[in-house]
Image (cartoon, rainbow, N blue to C red):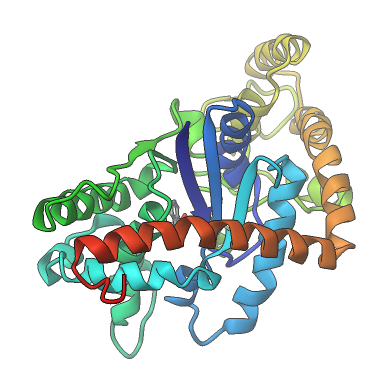
Length: 341
Ligand code: TRP
């Protein structure tokens, strides 16, 4: 059986962008039965740019765990664990650091663009600049074959593959496994715009997200406020559907056969004139609420029983540690630092 690993930084609740970009695919891969699945709550990585805000990271570990369980990650099939409680990841990070040059660290395009967006007043923390090395440790401690992630994570997979090749070559072994990224196909699925439209991707920090945990009133308000067609002033006017976020969402979420037919009819009427935004938004609300209501309900039962969620995390973390210990023993042997073996 192949091994799959992926993860998220616990810096906020998960939203619809995560759902279409990764979560639903993860659940499908889990349920395919083809993979031993590991999903990491990457608190150590979250701390690389939230080191002064530990309470936020701590709170979001359980929030993200509730989101996972709500969308259908099943702890009986997927090992869900907390990064900081698998210390082997820190050991591996230190060893891998010898294999990566400073110039290589500085070349990572995703880290570069994150550095542009963030404001590290006192300069770039070494921990942040080198988190891709730590991510290579995340991926390799369980010898993952595949890593389902968004396209922005491709540089991390590439860095991991380089480290694996170098490690195996330098230490004359084949202990580590070169992973493949699995990326979402199709543009509209890969990158869901936020509710303010204009091609900005959905993100908590941009304040344009619909969260899995949003209650129906919040969802309705957010849908009502969505960006549509600024030239569509009167109901009688013909409207545009390109770049119209409400229609973009309908294309992504209204995928049952009857919904597809309904959306086609709405598009036709909208473009001809005579259909107001309110009606289209009411329909989108119905579609999204149909998707989110069961997720929200399941989430509420987990959120009300934090002890159960923590027990699940503890169990997953124990399983991850068992696998990690095995890999570390092989790594230490290859590196000739298994002194008492
Ligand atoms: N860097 C990923 C993100 O920002 C999160 C992550 C941490 C991850 N460790 C991982 C993803 C290992 C895949 C595999 O979304």
